[in-house]
Image (cartoon, rainbow, N blue to C red; front, side, top):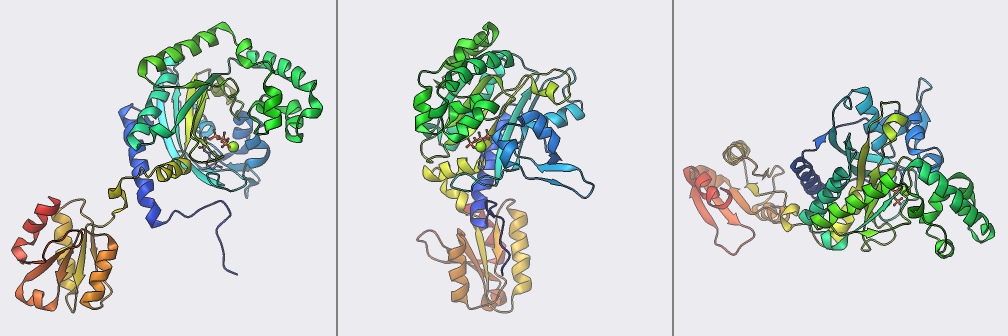
Length: 423
Ligand code: ATP
Ligand code: MG
């Protein structure tokens, strides 16, 4: 029996990693442009952290976490999302003491879900969090930032922003009562999952995918009728800021998000280009979370962006620039007993042109076989070094991507010739 990878945990192969790097590079650039700084966090945390933050009756904590006892008997979990760990680190390291923070991180998250397109057990998120800003300007900044990211990546046409306000916990408690009463009267019309949620987490019924449940919700009370005046004002100001910035949005009163910790603003960027897994980026405000995890009160707002879903979208829209796939610039063909001279030449090229990607042929073989490899490598040119060339102190330059005759240049002119191509 061959040992296989764990279902839903994918290898990212060399052909794919170039696109990953392109995406990661673009994300880091946009984050820097808004003065967000990177924080790097552990992948394992105490299970208690997630129970206390995400909420013990949420899908994630109830059935999606990878939790286990380690050798000391401590109950640990692979992080299912990044906000809890980020808040934990900020409290522990004193980053929230009389200061604001704009932070981002990126890396794998783990959830035991049914693997399918856009849904994995190990997936990757960009997480962005801002602490200590109470007003809606920062909510707007996060959305303006994501809108820029979509433009930069060429996927803006395919994404729609949905926003909603969840008000404060007390508002939701009153709404929860009203909703429970409404749905309780229609108990037998609910599916099993929703019947269970009616007890544990009735707001989650709002984003049920069941059409019958959705139909039932048409006449249900809506959350916006229960939200207090400060939250209403916060939401109105956010909308005005988005209008002024030219960021278009839809108000979705059913948008509640799956985590317990949100308050006031919640949002999702959705696409219909990916089928069922259409949410590429989601987040909101979580003003109570820092305190809930044991810190002094401090407001927070942030989002998680699913990297695999964004990559699927780039792919679906054919939005990855052609240059991203090219990983080699120069292929050094070395025929015969010329290895020493070949590696000296390769080193000279790498020194003369920082960033130039040079592959030196290392496996022997005929001139013809090596040229075939050079072509397949995607390199722009092949630099040819054979025993004849070596003896006469010359190199061949073969243009692999354009109709142009092969050239022979002397040793002293090789770098000058390449400078006209790569300089
Ligand atoms: P969904 O409704 O699709 O299950 P979610 O509400 O559980 O998403 P969040 O916890 O808000 O998702 O995570 C933020 C983003 O991370 C999602 O919008 C999505 O892009 C991505 N994501 C979440 N779970 C997965 C997964 N299992 N595989 C791949 N990407 C995921
Ligand atoms: Mg989920």
